Length: 299
Length: 79
Image 1 (cartoon, one colour):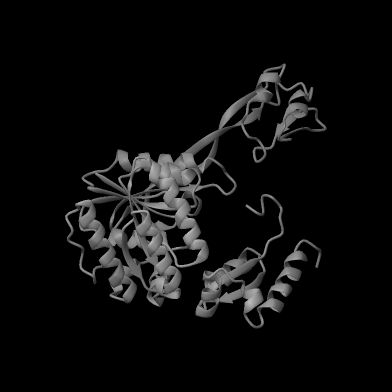
Image 2 (cartoon, each protein chain N blue to C red):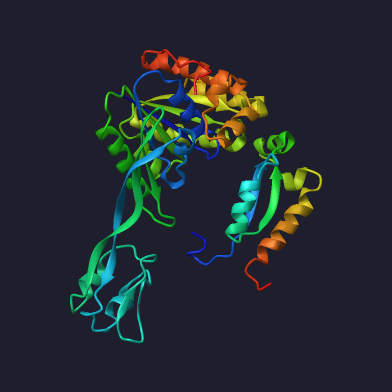
């Protein structure tokens, strides 16, 4: 199975639109994974029907048994996150939002009232879509461990691959832990860049993070006609780094329109759709996927 | 998230093509004021893309951003 991740340094460059287009164009059996767990929305473009949800416990949080607590306040005094308060009833209470799960309170508690409990910080989902099974997740607002959740989403996708020849991953923006979790073990990465100063800057950074992991790296320039001059700079940058540019996608109102309707843009035959077909054909050839794209009008 | 942290919040709608009724309805339901709407505009995109500031370079936006700053600063204060 070929593992392919669509990423971007900068947010909002069009990763999910590109991923959904590739999902719709790939004629081979595939599995999908949405590793942008902090803002997961591939499901809205591939008509996902939730099939299975399971809780995700990324970290632990202190839980204080009021029956056993003496109210000595030692834990509250030592907690460097100020997560514990001792109430008027002389019982210590931990605020999970502030708790980092370090376990110091458990260690210093003289009465054994504190234990570390798994903290549910999200939900891992498996859905059926018209383009294959989708592994995705919901991270609870304010929860950490998004890198671990990304790994969980990816593991789930790989564990139930069926006959998939391609694992297509919608990645996170940025260059941090979620990105690193996403690209570990992938065969190829497609960076979606936009022609702006910040787009060029973030493209350099994301390529820099991906390169040591050793995947083949490709680029797509989205909305390139909004600034063809910076677009040309981005192409020069890609050439200098040995990153093939699969294609340039023009700004196209049809993209917004199809996103609103929750459809991949590829069904429209619009300028962006035609460019994406070109990108996919080139990528399919590069990766050695049997490239028989679905009809442009499909979906 | 901002509710959990009890931080006063408002919304700026970016790249609007005018069809943002669902967003406005959601903001009303969540009791979040829409402080500004920035239209999708090639000139705005061009300024941003080359690293410029529309508040500095685009007629009329300086005062709009100044008003946004005032309104955002006043969010936490009692009406």
